[in-house]
Every structure is written in structure tokens, then in C-alpha cells.
Length: 271
Image 1: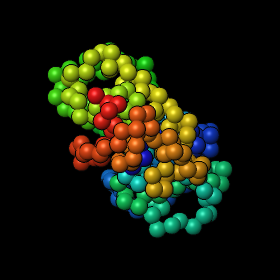
Image 2: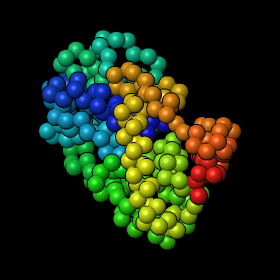
Image 3: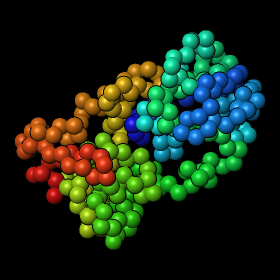
Image 4: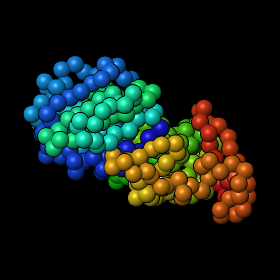
């Protein structure tokens, strides 16, 4: 699943090609993704200029003067820019055609992605209004995480993957951040000291920033909006390395499951 670094990489890739350009057509080849694609988008957006391309959590927000197009990549979706007359493949469900002669094309084999429209403040949309702070923002700091985890008996890994606590820390990056912070992923969130919360916050920010610089993580076929793959997979220290030696101490990396997701950790480095 595309996580925050992949979505941010996509945003940065497509923004220069969309911002300031007018929409000439909207093509929805399938009316139902995770939710129905709104009808009449071509009429709503025809001739309208993209004002900005923003991100909130894993949602991309294409801002227009009269509303916002909300895009989500779901489990396996991707966005790329193509020449508008490029024939669409089997899983290419949606095109936003621009006056530049190019189109923003959504590919989504599982159809768990979304194309939504709101004329109101998108931050008040039902999918966004209850989200926690952005992990790279100033609001996400040691004091915030310490207060957010008090009395929580759930594993810290599940806690930092809860989008109501903090957005965008998906499975890969949670494992990597906990390793860097030296925190066992199964440790109860509520017992972490403020000092350990500070280490974890710093590790989350570092991991995400590095992943964004590397263009995300390629685990299957992820590519950014420019069609280039991400390379952070080459920097993974624990994720996907069960049975291999820890790069820090040489102990064998172990694998457990939290909430139906695989977790990787070093039993010696993480306490």
C-alpha cells in the first residue's frame, strides 16, 4: 500500500504539471472505486484551473477555486502523467485531462482508491476531519505523543499506526522508526517515558524524511508521479529482514504480527 512518503513523492511529482493548468476533460472509465466516482465532474471542472496540489495524510487534494478533488491511492493505486491520447490499460480508471495535452491518470488494480469531490473545506470532510497531526509537522512532538499514549495498553506500533494519533506512519515506517528509537514494537504505549517518546518522534520524522528523499519504498511496483521507482527499500534495517543479522548488533531479526500486519524487530536493540 502506498504510504505517506509514496503519496508525498507522487504529490511532488505531479504538482508542477497540474498547478496553473486548466482541466479540459474528465474521463471516468469505471463508476465505482472504493466509493462511487461523483457524476458530472467534467461539467464541474471543465475550464477550471488547478490552484494547488496538497496532501493531508495519504489523501491528495487538488484545489480549485470552487472546491477540491480528493484522491486516494488505496491498496495498489498510482498516479502518473501521460499524453492525453495514450490508450488506457485495463486498470486505468480515471483521467484528468489538462490544457497541456497531458492527463493525470489513476491506475488502481484493486479499485480500493477513491476520487471524491467537495465544494466545502476538505479538512471538514468525513474522511479527514478526525485525523491526527501530520508526523512532519510541529504539532507532532514528544509532549503530544506522551499525552496521546497515556493509559493506552495497546502495542506502541499499533498506536503510531493509528491515524487518529498521527497520520501516515504505515507498517514499513513504523517498524523502521521503532528500531531506530530502540523501542520494542510490542511494548505498551502507555508505559513509554517522555524521553522515549522524544526518541520515537525524532525517529519517525527522520525515517519519513529519508524515505521522501529516496522517492518512497519500492515493494512490488510503486513508482512516483514521474514514473520513477522509490529507493528507500535499500535503506531498510529491519522490515522484511526476518532471519537476517541486525545491522547494528548482529542479532537475528525477528518477525511477529500486530493487527494482522507483519512486524520486524531486533530483540537485542529494541526494549
